[in-house]
Length: 142
Image (tube, rainbow, N blue to C red):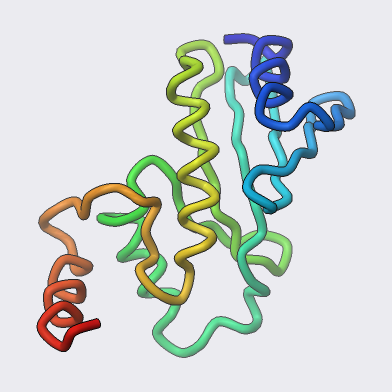
């Protein structure tokens, strides 16, 4: 994968995507997203803002870390510049189109489930703390 191919795929998702050097601003499922690329470092990331980091409730940073372990799958919650972000990070050179498209969808899902399931939409990875939370919720009919 290279930057031009990456941008072409993003433009297939949003034909109005706007590229400025190594940053592409685009929309997917009504959510503003950014693609950040660095070919020299062989890295890329797709991010979308989720919340103001100052608004995190007590215990919520721990919940974000738990989700990163078992429900966020290929994406992560991150905190930078006063915001909580949903982020997909990957080496650029080995990234496939399928992984990129999946990463975009997961970024949106993780952002959308913030404050609730904290999930990128896939199965819960066993061994963490989230499975017990889901089981308790199911037992209560949530």
